[in-house]
Length: 251
Image (cartoon, rainbow, N blue to C red; front, side, top):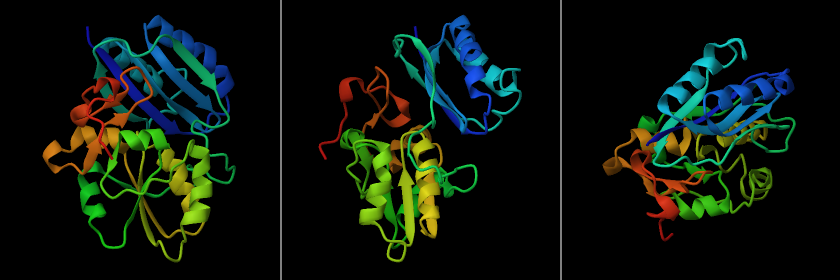
């Protein structure tokens, strides 16, 4: 049996996020879905897996059902597959942030960097003076990254602020491009950098997963595997499973 895996997020005001927890959990259980979904005042984030019919049903409910009442009309979605169920149980968690940066002034609903589609990404990387940032944690970068990317060497995303303060200068680094697994960390990171005075900040729309899904391997600038937070460990081009980190770059 093949399972359908959905990675999703959307920044959207959810003042009632606490009241959404139990009905969302029940909805997933009723569909036989497992994984983790995070809810906060700023939106929803997570990865879930189930049969194709179950995942399609959940997406329809999230977008058009009464629970969110049409608020999730702009979900960022990436689909992949798994030969075995990659999660042990279903969890819905309440959080202060759906991705933790720890800067209350950073608001992706107010400002974010310029989205760059996977089809346009390689062209951007060839522009002179571009600074390419991998916003992920160090163990993720070790498994794979884009050619020429700067590794901030952070243990957790909340340390990204310190890296920017110590290593980057808005007057010197005028054009910055960044990427992450599915796009959500770059929403926060780009918003933060714009607030710090960086003028041109770009980020890969849909993240590495969307790039690996859409860009042919023969044209790819990606080296290694993309770490995912489930039992599949890593995905490669075409979002094919690379169990136990197979295909990991030596870099």
